[in-house]
Length: 426
Image (cartoon, rainbow, N blue to C red; front, top):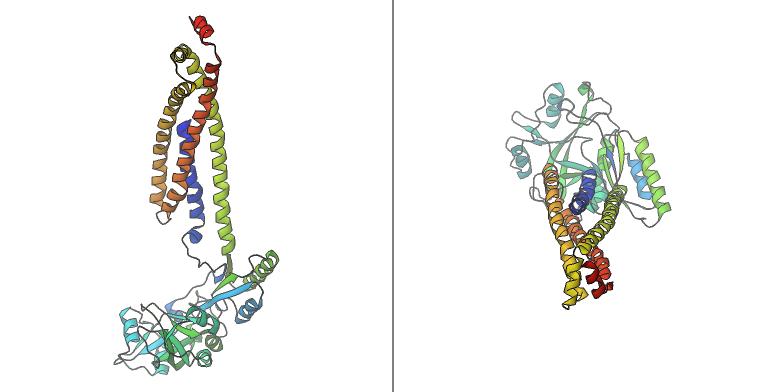
């Protein structure tokens, strides 16, 4: 019973958090920024080379009008609103161009290999010569407020909001670009379409020169060029925001929170292929799951501990009865109650020690199997914050139970008259 109690404490405290971690892994792994409480995101769609990597069907995502509604809603703050795959954009790399950014994209394998009449049309409109390439940059579209929020530190140039919104200027990674660099931007436009049908004949192109207005600190070619969403919407009315990150600024006001979530729910419902993720709710669900599982486990341990007290008391009483003559003789030789109690405690404590060791060893294969199968879960934190404390607390609890169980037999021995008890025993 001691071994099972320890096994339940060790494996149970581990499983309670481990299972919750696997169910809410995004929360545990920190995939959500601390200030992010909600997400609106496009949950479906497809693209292919035939349609120049434009996501289809069109009109998916959150409209600019709904973004303005969100910004006006009390209790909500927009962290960022992004366009990633809803549109595609290409830059022209001429054969003799020494641009570090364009060459880095080429080395990264970002050359677009499309074929057919529409590819020829795009090259013709861009004035591409034989040997020139279309390269696809890592690019994000976002509104001016998001650009200001995500890129507050400009390392070169000047962020001109008016020129940014018109598409005349872009924000670029400073490792490869400098303020004043110019690129020929080719944007394919498809207002309607299905990923399962060939509608490439309906694609048109916008070709224009864009200039780097400002650069930000960057380390990798994967750092994006930032293009104005206002400009993208002007080019392509079928485009929408595909990801919006939000913060709840009214966490202490349940009514304001409820109203804000109602607005987000309605926007998700009327927007095509858009889902709402309530991250604040996921965090609460994770904490509640851990709390409820641990409560159940420790309640079970308490029941077993109570049973162990009775078992220890009964076995101690039996041992005291069987060794009564020896204990009485010890008293006649001057042994005090503390000595008798110490002897009985040692007899009770030995099963606790061996049982605890057996229970701990029995739980290790379970822990080893789970940590090996779900190695992406940070299980080390569970071991130090839950499993080890649970083992120590259970061990101490069982030790106290064994001590409590030894008190009653000792009291019984101390109450006995030595002369009468020894003569009766003889």
